Length: 100
Image (cartoon, one colour):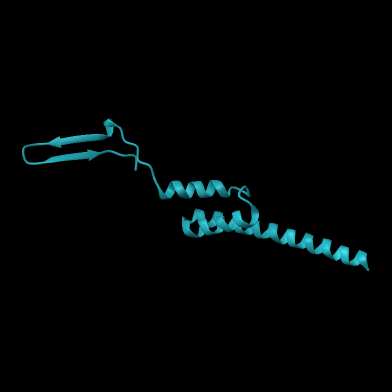
């Protein structure tokens, strides 16, 4: 009887671990799909779910979150070669040639 109970506990532990792994895999696939569709709010929700349930090093979750952060906060790099000033007696205009 004790053997049956121990075997059932081991089996339930294995099933729970397998289901948890499948949930992590499915969530990661959905996060990557949402990211590719530029649905960043859903991607962040899914990534946070993955971090909570699967660990912060699961898959490429940290990389996805970093890319979302960069996409939401683009950088603009300008040098003096990119800025042109045109003026006359009535107006002044500044032209900026950027990489955007």
